[in-house]
Length: 211
Length: 280
Image (cartoon, rainbow over all chains, first blue to last red; front, side):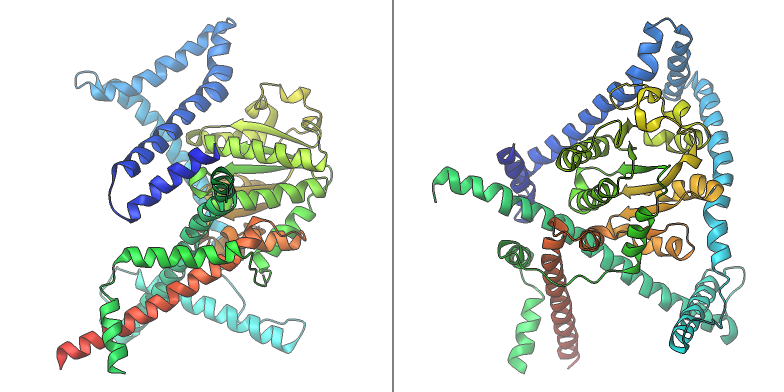
């Protein structure tokens, strides 16, 4: 298995040299294996125990689940497309209802947390000063970024254009931080593969070729 | 000086394959020579550690595994460290996966660590298995009100009533912590439908890409702690007093970042000098 994983890893890395058949083959094997595993897991852990076994055991009303899910496929038929709209409509209604609850559950705490005190009384002067400056910076960034996304009128005067331009700069800092984190993530994934090749595969190669 | 600037300008057109090779060498050297660097503990990782420490003894934890093999290098060390911590502190936990590959990774990791630390399936840990991500929100809402009724059985088909550690677990109030180890955006759903209404403590272990967007959740107290990619896993390993894969990999992470910073600086200096020369 280590040899197979190493060959596929090296085949996938070969794209860095140039486009080649080995890379394409490895890519398709990976996608195929992942898709096949998804189908197997969906059947063995969801559909079979929660639907098929129930029908086989006599709870035949579960067949209605197949009827309902089949209605989605009428989207491909021009004459009977209205059947699929019944299901899509129900699904969109369900999701919209959940979205209201989700919005409140996710955003309310963050809005509440954004009301920070400018003057903080901590255990020591340095702690109080540090936390106060941090809160002040937070409020400054929040207001300038919100000013940038205020599109109801044109930012002609300095009063409206200066916070907006500052917000834009602050957003650039944030995007830079996100990009830096993305680089770290990609490097981590590469390190994972390099570690596998160096510590799991190379010892096998050395044993195989006796060096 | 002119020679240096000429060289920098030529560097702008360097074949990218040479840069890939340089990156591979820079990454490999710390791994081959087992180099390590000091690892400072971030408040986010400390928060995650403390949240696990404070799980009440009469409640279970849920480890939500929502990643696949593409992010194994980041999420596997996080999961290893979290599950090891749960075992070491005798906190009962259940694995719940919204990714099919994640289900397998979670089961294998827990089984391996359970064997290493002498733990028993059903008594110290269990696995709910895979649930489709399309039903994630419905699953969350259902288990919040009626956990055994929603999740019904474990990965082997055993009814939850027959599993010793699940006796007495009725709803979300019997869950002391949810750890979301993920490479997809599942934390928003956990916060919106579990933390928001029920205030169940959450710990977040994302890939590094997703971490910057999560600091506002950390600041608002919606998540108690966060492990930022492989670096977060290394910090957690240090808190556990261990030196596993993530700790050994941080030196490679630092050298690769150093290389990128040097390349960016050289590239920008070369670009600016070539622009000046064209103007002259």
